[in-house]
Length: 116
Image 1: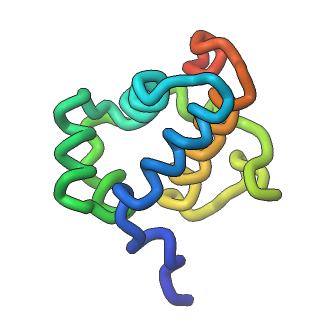
Image 2: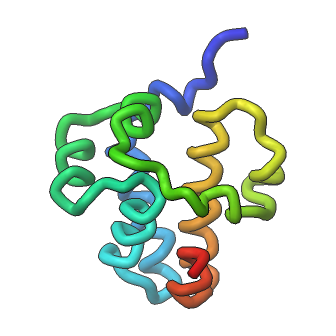
C-alpha cells in the first residue's frame, strides 16, 4: 500500500492552517506553537527551523527531539477517525496533532489540551 499523501506534505504548508483555525476561535499562534512543542519536544527555534526548511510530516516527526510521554492520553475523533485506533504510527502522530489543535480551537484550557 502506498504511503499516504500527507506524509510527504510539507509541515510548513499545514502549519498556517493550524494557526488560522486557532486564531479564528480567539487563540494565538503562540498557543499553537506551545501545543506543537509539547507534543514533539521541539523548542521554538527547532520548530521554526523545520518550517523554514519545508520538512515534510514524515521528517518533522522523525526528527522530533522527544515525543511527549502523555501523548497516549490524546483520545477522541478528528476528521471522523478515532485517534486512539489509528494503527500507522506516523498517521497517529499527525492525528494527535490535529486533535490538539482542534481542542485548542474549541476553547479548552491549555492545561486540558496539554493533558496536565
